[in-house]
Length: 490
Length: 96
Image (cartoon, rainbow over all chains, first blue to last red; front, side, top):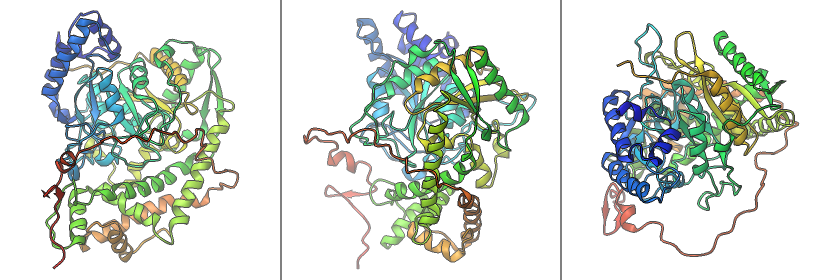
């Protein structure tokens, strides 16, 4: 019974709850049992056991008396970067290890108001800086998948690694993550699930602990494309508390699932065939293009010559904004405070003790590129390149409806084999950062397994606020891939 | 342009208010230098035809009603304080 509940998709569970095949309480209990069984995956930093059971009772009352909301009784997981009122929120950092927000992020509030239940806060790279989940102050989260004939533990990717693990290992029906340079899409690809980064401005950033404010976006991580559509529709919308959120109508995304893509023009950008991309992944990319062609789409070769400059631009803009955003964590008010005898000591020691290695590296790098004498050469140039990248995308979308690329240049790597130098680690983001720099929406869909039997994801990119095209095309890829979702060996 | 010195690391650590020990300076200097070399590729990018399209300003600045509302109480905000006294954040004495 337990597995038959936890292995459902969000849409199946929603329908089952409404038909009263099972209760929300049954669902929450089943997931909590499974979370205990798979504690070694370290998907969660904080579990909300009592709250979730109480919320399930409330949801069951709504289900019984007919006052059902869209996500009534659906258990979800929340990346620990979303402030949750009364529930500890750490951003994966020691400096916030005891922080309990007095307010709720808009996105989590919307899900809560739609009847969703939060099972816990998921593990993540510290302040969302990373592509492997290894920079979390609360330990590495582990990918439930393993390579064939190799028992090594794999990285789930990052920074939303815990959310990806929780969904892939059936520890929740869906999760929310954030994506600044690929942090939803790359872990989704590594763990064999769907993840969408919406258009910048589609979802409110209010209450999300900021990394790079001009690039951060929230998005759903789910087992299926339909589930992502259901969640995104609820998460989207203008919020007066985020001046960058856009007042634009939110379409009924779920209606796109199963719609025809006949005549859709799918661009294949040649610059995404990067050196790091293996021959095997190139073949799987070609296969994805064939699936779309078979469904009636037209493949159009596209050139985006600015692509090689995206990663360098990103690793200037991201640290620059991070160094500014993280200045607020100083040991004075609500963060870890070190023993100190002078004011400078208090700031410097609290930050040195509270931040991890990658966070310090980015703050120092950001401080350098923003400092007098270097600003124009680095930050100014990066902003020019950002405009250039965006312009190229806009030009490309004159001739195509969506773009198809791989999500990541490599598959999940063993945690003891992860790149030790920052540049090699940053290359994980080479196919995803362009989208954030241009503010575009993009989705990663599990498209198959490599010869080593690890998941591989394909990315679709659309023009601003055209997420509906992503859902439509992604559903076709999903239907063709017949992706074998992760199953327990036990 | 793409290499920095230990002195530069000391300076930016001071600007960023992060204590960096002398023993860490060498490693940080190397890491940041290698990142600067990597991002230095940008100088080759010809952006002459790109216009400033970062912000489309597609929408007017939304207006809201000028109504006072209570977002947080003092008690809620102080609940996360490292130390609080007399309804205020309390910090170590730093002036003799």
